[in-house]
Length: 476
Image (cartoon, rainbow, N blue to C red):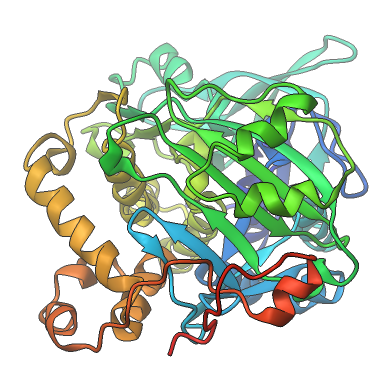
């Protein structure tokens, strides 16, 4: 086979741009096909409605991005993104109580999604080896069940159609992907699909916090308690790159959601603790409420097919989309890009390469999938269509063990370290069943339960709140 020359990526979002950058390291030319006009700054776009809500890039994903684009994380931090050390820089009410603020084990970058996409997109396109075709719609794949050799597209302004040839096509078109339809037209057997849908919905406003609070005040997260067997309500206050707070309130099916500005603060008052409401009550709202209701966990299984076309891959939300509340989407896409890079280095686009690469990419989404799905099934009114035995069997024992871990991790530094490694996708979920971890669960020192948010007097002063009691923020 001749050396591969051209790759096509369907979708110019986060996953698509990382995939395009990887392809450009191995192929002569890369074309990104995108329906939207991508903004030349940190602005929202129609094709990314979830971008108006809070996002985090976990340290595992950040490290991959920094490997693919050296210096990228420092550039984001220099431009205003906030690095939040878990759990020193975060105040969290978990389902089992307040989390002690232990020294940071991992971190997350907090900034607006349009800002992050724009900065990374600029770096990726600066190489000059990637052609971006905007306002272009993908009609179908070209090829057959044995091999995909390109795509047929339509210019959305002129209506002109054409076929684009490629050695490799990557579907990174997100939750709205039509991959199953395209494959059906090629007479590829139907893809298996799992769905776990807790009915998650999001409402977000941006606020101007008190002077100094955006940089000196910790991020705040108030979670629901699934054990109450009622629809869950959540709220977060996350610092952003422009010195503002992004406040996202969310719920599972049956809880309702504030769709109007006047309802936002009253809804925040219904959370398990008033901290989020107290913070925004003292802050100036800068935007109206933005609502989104796309939050189901959905996963396809191309690796299970006996037939998979050469020259085709799928990754990002087109492959597996998670409840955004867990913050795993962007890091999962970065992990998929790293897996793609490794497979291209190993075997390029030789016979069987696409199948091997798809197996490697699919493996990267398994941990975030099971973490998000197994958590969401605990909420009432969750709708599930899955054959995953980890979700369909042993629910009582699984939830009991999960609750035990949650109770220990908020009060044990060593247990918290391991759990944070897993949640950040730095360590595999299997670590939670290791003998080392199980030993820590029994032996590590357990601190007293916190009865109030672990905020220092100085932090409370930043936001003009009066301490309810004296609580240590240092995890000791």
